[in-house]
Amino acid sequence: MEARNSPNIPDYEDRDFVIDDAEADMEIRIIHELLPSFSRWSVDLGCGYGRLSGALSRKSGKLILVDYSMTGMKRARQKMLDDGIPASFLLADISHLPFKSDSIDTVAMFRVFHHFNDPALAIQEIVRCMRPSGHMVFNYNSSDNASMMLFWLKQRINGGNSHQKFPFPLKPGTLRASPEDDRRPIYFQTHSTVRSLIRKNGLVQSHRNFHSGMLGRVASKNSFFQEAARDLQTRMLDKWPSRFLFPNNYVLCRKEGRDDGTEFHKLEDLLACPVCSGTIFIEDDSIECANGHRFTISNGIYDFRNPS
Image (cartoon, one colour):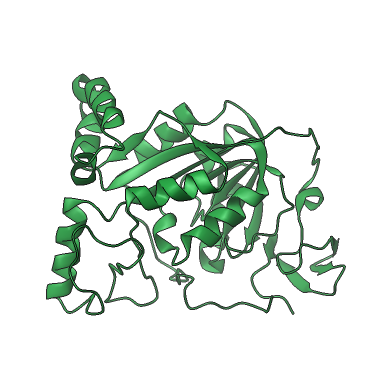
């Protein structure tokens, strides 16, 4: 594996970038209601500037924040310091994570899946790092959805998506919804594509699901409709009408298998070289694996992006 600086990894080095927090309350509720009450090691994968890391920390013995953006990670680290939340900070490519196999108890990944141009590779790598019986919660935007089709059409009218003829439903993985900004391509997958990835990687999907979109917003703003809407959207999840009501889906999965009980007491115990999976050695501000791949540590941030 060579040093990587992939153009497919979105660029979020903007100093003032702030994500829309319109669904933050729902995502915090999902962390609170769906994830186990306690996990030894939890990872906020694609943490950005740490907007949900505090909520995840309340269910974690030890928390690791992972992202590819140095700018975002510096902000996340400062936020954790300001809030008095202990955490570790890693820069890494999600398709080549610096963790040993079967080491992470819980993975939370919000607003990240749509950036994967190869979701099969990313999910395979994430599952590799999860302990058997470990949990992952994530969201994805489905392409077989009426609002997404209208969004695609709007982009096409504005000059984007010229490479794709209009299909019905939209084909998985072929929609780039941000043609005006090549630094941040967005790919939408069909429900069936994501369900297939879940099954193929030994994940068992929970029957408790959340959605945002038409009914999701109603449910989050009006308690009278909350339980009825949640029951309806769960019943409809894998049925054809759901494609038109719920573009944004939140899924909880559990990795099949039996945990062997291996304990990882400190961060260095569960780290491995993302290039060769070799044992790593940390001294001062440098990281080196047994096969000679070197990485750096700067201001408490472990940089596993491009080995030297």
